[in-house]
Image (cartoon, rainbow, N blue to C red; front, top):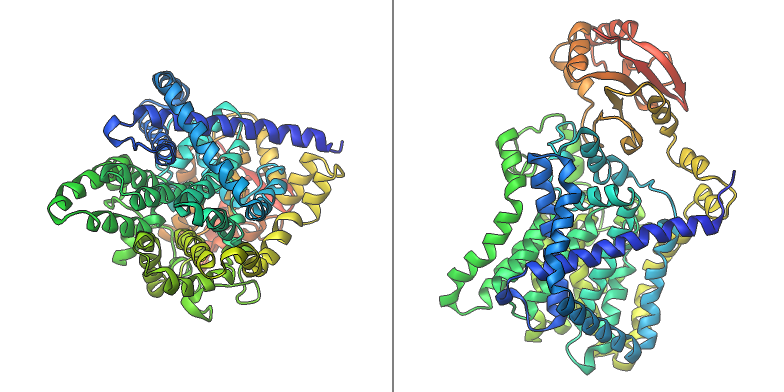
Length: 606
């Protein structure tokens, strides 16, 4: 039966409401937890900091309690936090209203700029209406929280390097998964994106002369293809960016070092790729203070950062000897188990052969990349805009986002999306430069600059492809759409229909989130565990023993490893001895079925 658009919209509205409620509660929790001496006097600073602090506190406590006691603590911990925060409900609500009135005044003062900003905001809607189908969410960011709930505890997922990263955002997704379902994660991520736009407006606004620029800066950032493309997906980039944005706002307004440290700690507990921007903010926060205060300020700033990252660092240190694994291994040139040299080179030198300044893909024709790694030509203007506004002392602290990230881009050539704080900062300078040079014509000039980026972002958002459009038009059922978008989904359903219990091991599987039992699936960069075992000891008995030790009852093989063909599993072999072991293993397995070119084998009991 085909889906009807009112039903699709109602489902999306339910998840959007749940995400909005969670964001408000995170803010309330943070507001109540902030000591009075760290709570800025201005609501435009206090409210963003409260959301950053509340997200950090909720994620941190959920991780610790889930690791030590089990995931049954997710809801009780959150309930206790909410009850604790109710004592601050009245002042928090008053500050929320003050910030809302300020943003509304900016919209009223610059209606054309507000209209421009509404374009990228509305572009989020089509993707948000879809079920959870994005790759990173289904492999990592929502998949791992579901795996933790299935196993009953938070643990280090050793089969993929993403399992060793800090998981502050994933803990919020686990809470959302428990309360309202995995699709709420998309709306949470989009909510942090919109919150970052609000922080950028507050950062840019410094008086009547900057009202238009205060809305143009969020517009110029939001139309950036690499910013808007992941915004409606269950990624974590915009959660990390929000914390960096809050730290920048506090830096510019000369807030206490400890308050800046809380926001930076929240950023590090979300994604370690914020390190260049965080380093720049930390250095700037110290140097804007008198020399005699810098030592004490350094301690005040570092303490919340260290505390926020501490449980993640301890877990990695115990398991790998590297508190920032796998980053530490990568910087020291140490081998990372399961990661080939080619995969590591791909991550650090993705844009090594991209021509032009800093190796960025300025548009789709500039380099063969996906839209979520396109920068947009308007940010090239942003690099030149620095020369126009750098003389203004009050704007210089925002350079902390720009220069360290540019330095990294000169040394390495990773995905441009990992450098999102750079483009956030450039949007700030672009808007201020336009307001200085074009004045009354700043908004039309911003639109002209953004047209090339919009030519990438609009088709990406509105013309998602034939299956999504058919689904949104009601011509395709939810199940049919998901089967088209995720061809391996049929195999997951086949495994789920089997008797409960045990673990499923899947090779090159794009959507482990849709398994209803614990799984062992390698990430995009890692080699399958079965291949790693085969290289160490090419014997069928050893392979079978290792699977049994992990209680693997089903083995799922996608076409990338020969699934659906007589050569199933053979691509794992790199030698005659390994091929012999694979054939012997195949003889022991029982083929349950093949769905969409994906084989499902049953592993024999001991």
